[in-house]
Length: 236
Image 1 (cartoon, helix red, strand yellow):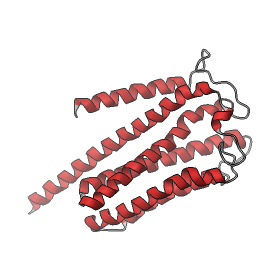
Image 2 (cartoon, one colour; image 1 turned 30 degrees about the vertical axis):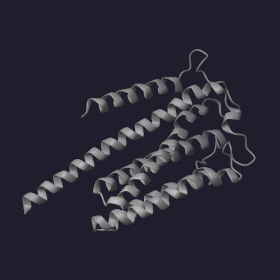
Image 3 (cartoon, helix red, strand yellow; image 1 turned 90 degrees about the horizontal axis):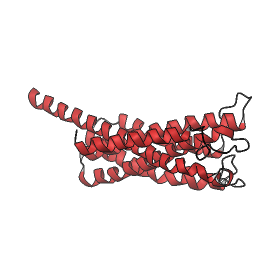
Image 4 (cartoon, helix red, strand yellow; image 1 turned 135 degrees about the horizontal axis):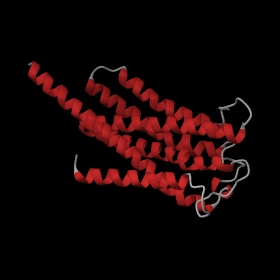
């Protein structure tokens, strides 16, 4: 493992440790979030839920870049990178749905058994994750590696084209309980600016964690590809 990679990994680990300390800081005043009506301490989920979606969007963009590269060069490595970025993106998307469901329950439906209410933003986020799940279903249905890589790359670009509309544009045009939707104030209007001291580093930190997971999976996939190639050479 290159020393530079180890250094970056260490920086990300330390960075996220500081983010977690800031997110759950109850002592003192400079990081102790003010009580917000309805949200109370559930507002700390801002440091996790929203960065997960930013991480998903960053990884879908990375996946699309490598999908284009795959179509241009037919490189199996580009296909691996595109597939891996999409996989980690879906993982963060599912975590975003889970944290959002829990947050919604304890903010809007505490005392009930409601964990999902098909709020437009929730629903469109779920649709976005399903679109990328279909990407993997498509891949599993194709046997020829080159054909699979090219068809999956085309679908990947379609999936990425839906990201800004499903996660940002359309939800803001519809009535929703989420902050920033039509008729609701933005989250920045109902939370204290001090929360940004942790929020922005959290976004960068989660993207860094996504990058770490992505690079590790790519390294593993390339190693397995090389092993298969060696086995095939020995077989013949």
